[in-house]
Image 1: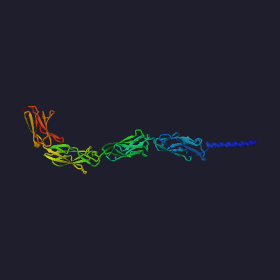
Image 2: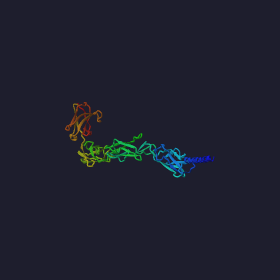
Image 3: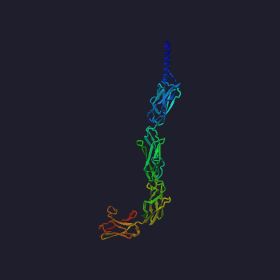
Image 4: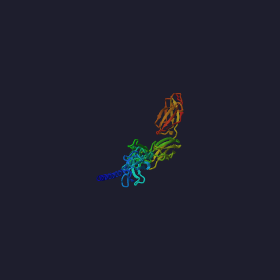
Length: 432
């Protein structure tokens, strides 16, 4: 019997010791928790508002390094930029506690803490990285509705900023700039860390409204339009006449805007600024009797400047000069002033009327048109009877009037530059 009892007691003690060891290793709670350590999940990267694949995981150990079961771990996040599947978790038999992380809407680093009050290593810190969800919004920062000089860079760059649907800036997004009105450099730009992309726009050489486009092909409705205006601010290059350079006018007559000139810059664009009148043409009477007005005339948006003339009372030839300086040759305009021509007399015989005028009162440059009308108002019954082109001819005849009527006659003076005036009106009884 004694030989049998001894092995049974040893066996019982050995079994009892083995159970204690297994319970301690499994974490029965008989061990006091001493420290908390990370067991994985840190350093993950994900898109905003998505759940990370791996859980955040910690382990609770006793002072002897054995796991401790049943310890509650609290999880928290800095700046509320994440949520957890569980804000608290209890350690399992191997001392582990975990939670899954869903990132918030802000693209940034996310700091998460796992804490057990009083334990060494508490809180355990984890850092995650939240990235943008892709571009969904594009906005102009600068460069729209600006004004620049033809052939030059616009003063402000074309600049846009790109965000995702949660308001996060999106870096490294390709943006393509293009225009049919000049050149943009560089044509392809990647957004920087602030979501900005910019390029320099150089206008073409034409005055007017310009358009450019910024395109983000990786997003819907990723096109944004820029508009600008190109004006000329160069020195005068070309100074030309729009009107003729020779005029024929009555003495003492006054005509507004009879002189018309155009000012262009080196690209052939009208030279002007807003408001019009910044570039001016200086008009001066070089010789003769009369005045020019205004003496300074500003160019309009077509590069046009005009001036009027008032001739003196006597026969004269007046020369007016237009000058813009800058080494450009001036332009001269000549005005011939004449007396008012008049019908000297009319005779009638055999149904033919002869009209006479005084040669010394008529300019020798004009064609004369003899006109007849039934009334002195020269209404819709007015007829052109004869055009006299020979300046030595001092009369014209009308052999078509009705005998016994008293028609009215006048002579229309047709000047070569499109101006005209009429002589006095005379009537006559048509005799048989």
